[in-house]
Image (tube, rainbow over all chains, first blue to last red):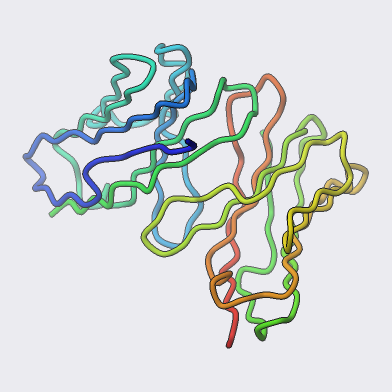
Length: 113
Length: 112
């Protein structure tokens, strides 16, 4: 099973809302990632968790708050987003962060009104 | 840091023809090169990858070649089918590193 599951698939939120994106994998991977992808562009790295610890934060605004409750779960908490934050948010995982096969979920299409 | 360039940005081929997408990278320390296929509304799917100790790898109709000296690698799709239509991304990463550097993507259209 090489599946990374993301929920919800679609999300519409206002600029004052608080919402969370969820990601789950049961491949025993110890590295999990959040990427942001705009239409027709490559994924942009936001955060990396390695062994449940945040190892990379790519200067992401504080309105995005990641959380890794355990080795299988990854959340992205959203608060006071801006319309320009509308994008496809992708979760990914691999066995460790040392350049091994990276598997993506199907993403959450986020629209901020 | 690493810079990955990808060409062409769009590619149209007739069904049954071959398609080739090329990427170049800048960091000689990069040693892992995956290729992803992304269909509309879906996440990127890993389709093939190659490590720097190998010059070529093939999986059915898909092959990847790597030229370490010239710092470029290519994706080859033979006998293209309409279901191969998608956006393809190349990427590069370094052993011990924790980032994947993506190319800008190629939108492939296979015309029936």
